Structure formats: C-alpha cells, structure tokens
Length: 312
Image (cartoon, rainbow, N blue to C red; front, side, top):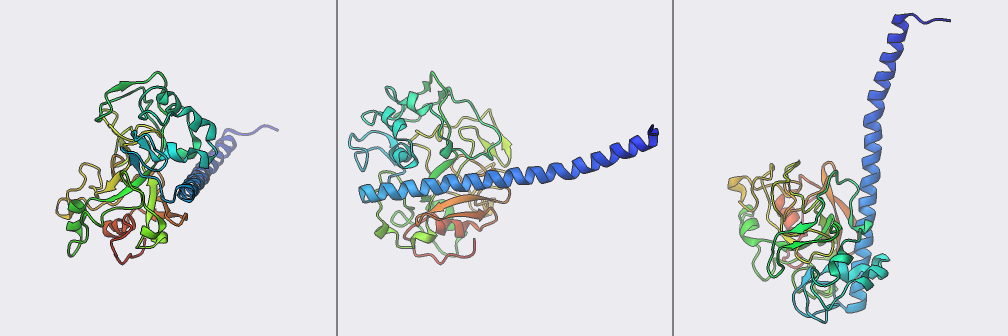
C-alpha cells in the first residue's frame, strides 16, 4: 500500500512535533540527574570534613600557609588534599607530598589526577590547565599534565566593606566576618555560634579557572586561583556582584546586589537553573535560590555574627 505525499508530510510533521516535545523533557531529566549527582558530591565532601574534624579536633583550614592540623610542615596546602582519605582517595593522597607546597616537586603530578567527587556534571565546558599565571609565592608555571579541576570551594566568610552597605547598619567586622573554613583556621564545632545547620562550609564555584561573566565564558580573562582541586588559593569571601558579572563588591548603589551566579571568580557560581548547592556545617546539603538576598547569604556564610536568617 503506497502513501501519498501529503500523508508522508503529515507523518513527518507529527514526528517533528513529538521530537520537539521530547528533547526538552530529556534535557530536564539529564539536568535533574546532574543536580542530584552534584548534591551527592557535596554530601560526600561534607562527610569528609566531619571525619577530618573527628580526627583532628577541628575542621580543615580553607588553605594553610603555616603549620597546622594535617599540615605539620607548614606548606601552602588546601583543604582538599587534607581530606582525600575521607572520600576514598587514600592512594591519591599517598602521591601528594605534604613536605612541599602544592605546586612543588611531584605534587603537580598528583594534582593532575581527576577526582569525580570534586566535579559537577552540570558544568558545560572547561579550560585545559597547562599553565598558571603567578600568585605569590607561587611563580608562573607550566605543567606537564593538565591540572584536574574542582567545582566546589570553601567559603571563607564575607567582605565587610562590600556587604555592610547592603544592611541597615554595619554588622560585619574583622572579628565576626568568617565562616567555618578560612585561611589558617582551626575552627571547632563549639566555635560555630550561629548554629551548624545555618552556616555554609562549601559551595559551588564551577568551571574555574575558565572565567564566566553572567552566563558567558570569557576565555581571554586570566584567573590566578581555583586552578584545580589541589590549589590552596581557591577559597574566597562573599562580596556580591552585578547580575552581568561586570563588577563585584561595588555595593547596592552601583548594582552589586546579586548573591550568586553572576561571576565565578571569587563569588558563588553554579550551572544549575535558579540557584546552587551548598553544604552546611551539620553536613546537610541544600539548594539555595540565586534570588536569595545578599544579606541572607552573607548571614549563611558567617559562623558567629548573630544574624537572624530569613528564607533561602
């Protein structure tokens, strides 16, 4: 039985409509799966931080520059190498030499090993890191193998000069601006005065060192930190940014009111629609809306400032 041309065109049109309906559904399912995997990664990271705290009596510093818990040699060491055994990466930690800075000796070879727990599957593109601009005391470098990435970073706290202008009166100062993990810190559970369930430790900051402004990649811009999971200089403090990512820390008068997903160098940034995942000091993971007011996210990013936290 033959089909007429009109019948064939009708069938083709129906198939095209069905495909058009199916593709968005498939994309939504894929993103839902990626978001779940991302949350699972952060859950594992949260458990690792708790296990470290159980072993050493304090959470790891966001980055060490002096001797401290897990870093007796006093080298430049980040929190991820310290917690490798707690995400079932004991063998990788054995490759890492804690007697050297993360960029010295054989450590770049360890830093080139990809760790899936540190990577969010929603990140659409990456930069192959075979070189890095200088960030003292680390010199400019070239690497024999690409440095493996991370999409999760410790939040150190807030920048008072950037966040206080958003508040009715100043709240933050050098004594209360910090989160759980900051430079050379040794914070215990007892030091989290604002409550472990309302204090963020680690959040998404995806695709670094490739720079994003808004949702646009800017491959021509250099980024001297967050260049891989071993980098000790990736952690940052919250500033707030313009929605298009053109500036950060410029206050409400100049439009720096976006709390996340505006720029991925020194600000929270995820590739999930509508927000980003964060792990809190009690170990739970939450999806925080990107429309969360900057003062609310600032309150979540400090451990002992006594704020009243609104909906997020």
